[in-house]
Image (cartoon, rainbow, N blue to C red):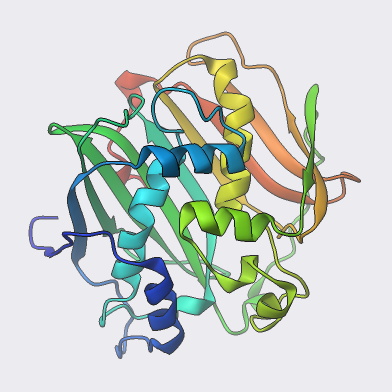
Length: 305
């Protein structure tokens, strides 16, 4: 994106103040919504060892493992995501957005000593039957080499999206041979907020979640993805891997849930699908795939739709 306006940040923007700004933000005025041509940059970023270890403990990773957990770079980039969406020309209501998909590709494990450059930008808006979707694409480089990238897809629902939906036949539930039981405490959202900096009120307390239309506070989708990664990543035994997921039904706290998966397929590239379901198996909260990408077939995430 050669003609993009670049927003440079010397220090990491504070998420708490960003949420305050988000509550007061008004969408940019435009007759035909489109996303502004902007990039958010932060250079020479180093992860804090104590913060990484605290995050690892909350999300189920080994806190003594060398390098960053595969999902931790999202924590470094998320304040820049917020700055993009808080831009005066952003045409959508920020507090109504829903994070529906997330794809991560790690080219190698990021070390605590690595000095990182982070760049975030938008992909164009896409009209769907549920509303307007858009991607925030992130590239993290070290010494000029891209080491980690992601695409986070968000949805701005149509006011009458429930009336626009077409009837769909639900596929039969997938069959899995492995599972892991999870017990999620009521304070999980607050614990995750302390290690991620993401204090979205829908994850903190029942009362704060009710202000945004939820009967109770809900588990953070990126915590669920990270917790699944902590279990599944060791099965692939590879620094280079991709981790994709769709966020489905909210997981109200406290909760019992079950992570289901099959052993990784042994052909090239190795991969495994997984689902996070309610303890009774009737609700799916997360669906995803972790795999070793075929390098020859890979393309930059910023060009994928």
